[in-house]
Length: 435
Ligand SMILES: [Zn+2]
Image (cartoon, rainbow, N blue to C red; front, side, top):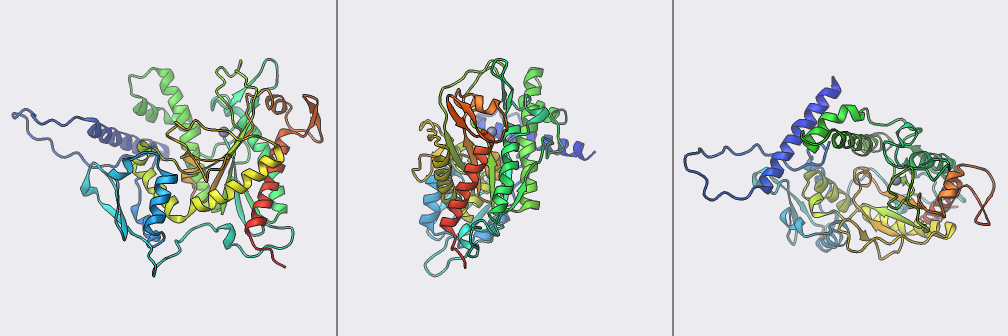
C-alpha cells in the first residue's frame, strides 16, 4: 500500500514535471485564436529530479552571513556551475543573494541569503565536523573521534549483471564492482578503526537499501520513457531507477538520518567503455582519481531540488573540506599504489578540475549531492584494463602473487591499505597532535 502511494506521488510529480518542461519548451503564441477562451494558469510546480521531494527552501536560513559576496561568487563560478543559466535563478547583490524557487513562475517565491560582512560573520550550523574542528588526537590515532561512513559502490551479488558493473574476459572469473567494493570496505573498516575512527558501512552485503524493485518502478519508468517506448527501454529505465536513483536515495536517508558522519568514503573501481560485458574491450592503461561535488550543468541547476542542495553545499563550506581532504588523500593513495592520474576531456560540461590538482575533479553525482556532509568518491584502477583485470579476477588472497613478473598483493587489500595510509597521513597533517 505504502509503495502504491509512493508510485502515485511519483507519477503526479512526473506529470507536473512534464507540464513544466512543456511550458518551458512551448513557443510563445502571440496570435492565439480569439474564439478560444484564455487558458487558466497551469498549477505551478518547480522542475524536480526523479523521485526528489519538493525542496524546503527554509533550509537556507541557517546560512545567513556565512560567506562574503566574493567568496560566494568565486565558489559558484569556479567550482559549482559550468554554464551561465544560473543567472536566471540567482541575483547577486552587494549585501545578499536572491534565489528564485521557479524561473517559470515569479510568484513561486524567492529566498534571500544575506552575505557576511566585515563586522558580521556567522558559522553555519552543520551536522558534520571539519578535520580542524576535532580536538588534538592521541599518539598514533589521527582519526580519533572521526565518524566515517564507508559506502561500497553499487550492489553486486545477484544484482551485478542488472547494474551493468560486471565483466568477464574469456574463461576468466567474472569481475563485479559491487562485490569488490564490499570486500575493500570490509578490509578498510578495521584499519580505520585502529586509527581511532568510528566506522559505519552504508551497506553490508548485496541487499538493497531501497524497498523499491525494478518491477515496482515500472509505472514511473513508463511515465518517464513514454508509454510508446519499447518494452525493453521501459524495463531498462525501471532497472536504472532502481539501482541508481531509488537505491542512492535510500542510502542518503541512511547516511543523513541515522549515521550522520563527518565524512563519507564512496568506494568504486573505475572502468573505460567496454562494450559487451561477456566479450569486453580491454585497454592497456590504468589510472586513478578522486571526485568531489561540483560542476552542475545548466539543466541540473534548473531543477529546484538540485539548485537547493548545491547552495547548501556551497554555503556550508563542504567544498573547502572536500577539496582539502581529496587532494591530500589522492596524493597518499597515488604514492602508495603508483597509479597515474586520470585526465577528463576538458570539453566536457559536467566536470571541473579542483585546485588544479591532477588527481581531483568535481562532478555532480547523486550520492555526493545527497549525502549531507563531505564525500570523497574513490575511483582507482580500471576494471577492463590488461594491467588490473588479472589482479581483480584473482580475487582476495593473503601475501603476494606474481603478475607480469611482479609479486603483488590482492588488489582489494592494496586498495584498503593505500586508503587507510592516505587517511592517516591526511588527518595527521591537518589535526593538532595531542600529548
Ligand atoms: Zn562505480
